[in-house]
Structures are given as structure tokens and as C-alpha cells.
Length: 115
Image (tube, rainbow, N blue to C red):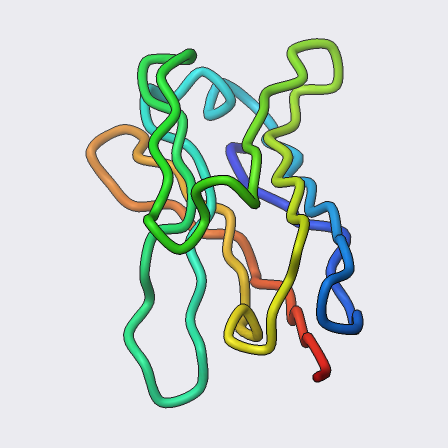
């Protein structure tokens, strides 16, 4: 069964770092679009970083220069390294993939950045 299971996240002070990991089971790891979204309280869900065609990386403007998305083919994970975190990065972070003509989401992880 294809599913996305996130780990990592938590509470960090402003300026700190966190690493999120998304374990993709089944063939979904080979999706041509896989990455991370986030949703802050009262706001719409938005893309953070996505890997397209297994190698092209797209970042939201807010993530450029601070976040890095990567694939670990041996572990079958898609990881998001977040540095220089700010309070406005506080949100629920979701792993996402486009697979078999449908949107697939992980359960979500809370990331809280204190000032």
C-alpha cells in the first residue's frame, strides 16, 4: 500500500534548525512530484519544496536559501532540512505526492518556532 509517513518536527527557537523526513512506502517513492507543503493556522496549504522528475527541485520564495529538499534512495525518504527558522515558519508540514492521478498526503507534522 502506498503511503507517506512523516517524522521529525517539534519546537525550536528562532534561528534554529529542524529536519523533516517522509518515508514513502510502495511505488509512490517514484512519483514524479513529491515534496513538502505546509499550512499555518488560518491560512491555505502552500508548497514549500518539491522534487520533480526525481531530480529538479522547486522551492517557495520563503524557503529559498534556508531549506533543502533531498531524496535518499536507499532509505526511500524525502527529507527537508530547515535552517534559519523563523516564527512565520510555524505550521503543520505535510509530505505530498502526486500518484496514480490523485493527491496523496501524509498525516502532517507540527513545527513550532518560538521567538
